[in-house]
Image (cartoon, rainbow, N blue to C red):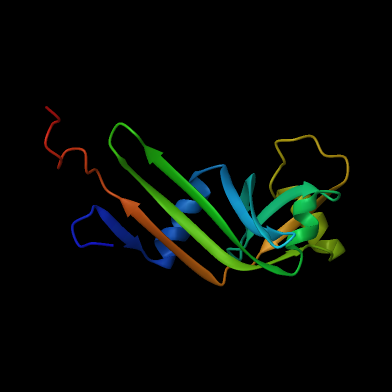
Length: 144
């Protein structure tokens, strides 16, 4: 990032404060040796893990179990040309512990899609990075 490009790096705490402010993000994983990206609704758990709920039969659930993935969420305002983006990178795993499944069924994310047989996928945050783009519209000269 250039010193005056309008971007500012966020520290881990700022990233964790911003993540729960949006309902959707994208999970980035590998499927058949190719990159795949899937929009998902999510929940930030008490231990700061990102938790998704999906169909047990989904290709994503099978592909991410015990794999390193990235999760990205953002929020931008086109009018002010400002916003933020946070990326969580870590190991994903399908939750199998019965007491943890019960807890997440009660308090975890509710899938926006109807699910008959769902599973929770937990992404343990290894690396959390982010950046904010501050209002650069005011700093730019008007177009002719």
